[in-house]
Length: 178
Image 1 (cartoon, one colour):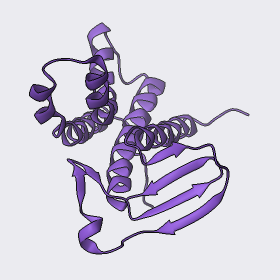
Image 2: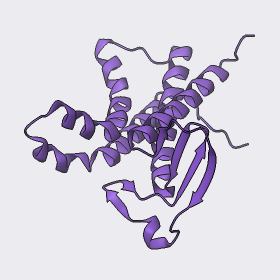
Image 3: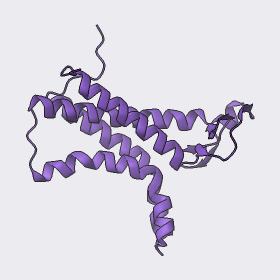
Image 4: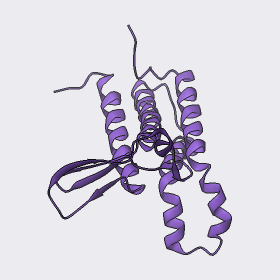
């Protein structure tokens, strides 16, 4: 079955968004694999103050727990919102890159390949970089810790700017309203 010219970029965008969502939620500790295989749901404290209570910059408290077999998920609406924004922007960037490549409207030189991958690398490092730096044992962790709070907004900004640039280069819209 051959994919239409618009189907492949959409599928790639969806795959990138879902994959990023899973890895991001796992990296921040909202999704985990457990040995128990029970099914359960538990609602915690659900008031507006608790909903917006941050554990650290851009990492919020959970209001519910869901377990489906071996997958345990802490439900935090604010974390899910941040995840959806970053995954949507990443998916839109993947859609634009694949569509531009298919249409041969984007000629990439050696330097542009890294420039196109930079937004995705920054978005991925927004959740994982602090843990990696801690594991590596860099003595200047305190110097870097103030910068980590800016990685998520910086990632969203760069992904948004990259998508804007793709649209100016002729990338099709991800969603078309008819």
